[in-house]
Image (cartoon, rainbow, N blue to C red):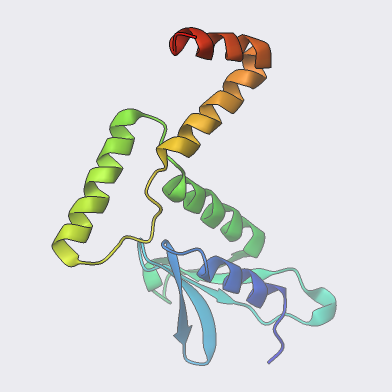
Length: 149
């Protein structure tokens, strides 16, 4: 069996942990959504007509399957992955994440696979954005006033 574009797309999606995982249906490698059980399987295409189509079994049900361009499924998967793994913006959201990370570790002895928000990187990002908007010198002056220099 040739590993074409469709197979590469499915393999890429399957590695977007923690929302997808690698699975096998019969002799076919697939990506399974850990959110709703949807399966994404590669479609065999002739090399000369390869377009990257994938077969989607909605909620894992082969009776509800659709063939779609793999780039569309990958785009949705990447967008969802970024949403789930992004560093939260608000202090309330950050505190909620931190509390649940600690609570999960306390209850299970294990760690979540999402990264706990790093307050230092959040501050660095905020400063970068401020520099883009206000300029380096203006941000320097604001920081000096805030820390009383």
